[in-house]
Length: 137
Image 1 (tube, rainbow, N blue to C red):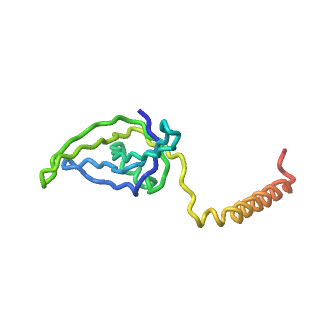
Image 2: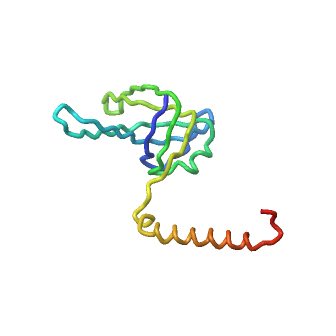
Image 3: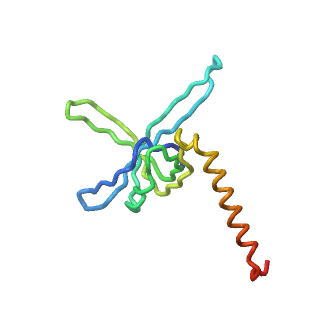
């Protein structure tokens, strides 16, 4: 099963009683549809996820990252200390594919200057390499 969503906070590594490390994180999955009246309905589902393959994944799993996850879902139910019944789902992740990050307001405001700077650097590098006479092309 595949799901796509954004991390709701930075991932954390925890250790089980057996000494095995697991990366825990949560994603928000958005859905929208039109009801019979033609109104747009927006829904968000929050899914707890676990990744058991390597704790190194915590390095890039930061809040706001858009990811595509492959894995399987499991359901769980429990009783809290005050006697309230609770239920939830967990996505046991086998593959994590980063799809992109949201741009911050600062990045959006400086993007044209940064892009222009990158173009001029590329042009400078291209000009230097084309001046080299020992290149066969």
